[in-house]
Length: 204
Length: 204
DNA sequence: AGTTTCAGTGTACGCACGTTCACTGAAAGG
DNA sequence: CCTTTCAGTGAACGTGCGTACACTGAAACT
Image 1 (cartoon, rainbow over the protein chains, first blue to last red):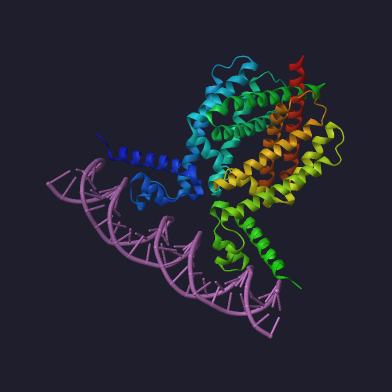
Image 2 (cartoon, protein in one colour):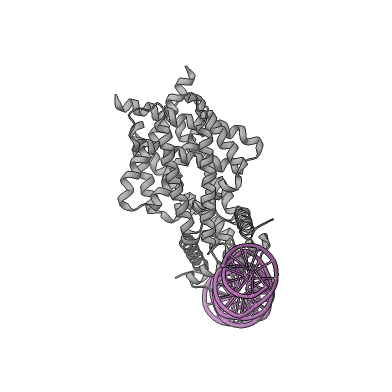
């Protein structure tokens, strides 16, 4: 049987899912409480039993979306062989994750510069955390003697390229994927090779 | 004296400026015809004398914003000395332009993933043109034997980093600018060095 | 068994929106 | 000078919005 809190949780999920879907067309800014309620099958005022405002809903979606992103990076980490293969694996995992979870990636891309200030800031903060996390991963690569500041600069560059690539994947047809993969691999390779050579040159 | 068409042009400009300003808070999606009209000091219906719809207004703003971007790249081109100095000059010009023309850069950043499909697509098309243009500039650097396809991959990477940096500049306080400059220079350097080394290695 | 809690209901409100239409009055043009 | 053009007016419309309020009825608790 279903307890009261179970049912509440199910409705909450339905609201999140409906919002995520509706946001794809209009962005969070163009999302109305009434649309969501209609989609879920509840009366508009019942929305307030679950969220104080659309912004709070947005923050929950940010949380959820970045969980998905973190799952991705965890997926890359396990089984990380040679430096050359890391590039291929990273790109493959990115493409796979974005296509499997279009909604969350699209949400992040959109709301990064989107309408609500509080949601926008939350996305940015999460990206900063994500960059920091990635820079720790980079520290494990054979890039000895890099300062953590420099690793974050590289990390920032890589995350930026990742976002751009994700957006490409989101708008692409399936037949364009090989080209996108090739481009992403080349770019990641350029960044890593560039970082290694530039730094080793500077230290000479 | 002021002719009738002069006055019309002035009102049109006022609408564009008002829209550009109001968009900073809400995005183009959250912009209402009535808000714009109130700001300009005309009655809502008079808006239609100048634009068929908010989307058309948006397209005009896209046009305008990318003119500003192209002016920037022209500014970089003139006086381009050694490869090392190109990096410094490019970053300086970018920072300067973004700060002098926040509104247009912010508009591009926002509407790239923003609400209206037609405006979003227009921004993307303009970015593709811009990438192509940049790849022609890159071809003049001492990167012999690069295919134009590879140059566009590099160009795509650089433009992506440029957008990310622009967004940083837009949200930054003046005191954070030196750090952003440093980061942008490092990243641009990494990309160029990486591209040179990776390719020369591949050709060996 | 009796009471409390609370997710969801239904009505009603005032507001801002885009768009319509017939209009005005001064500039442009014959 | 008389006519045409046309940027801007002003009232009116239907719609969807967020939110308030009093409510119901079943689950949870004592």
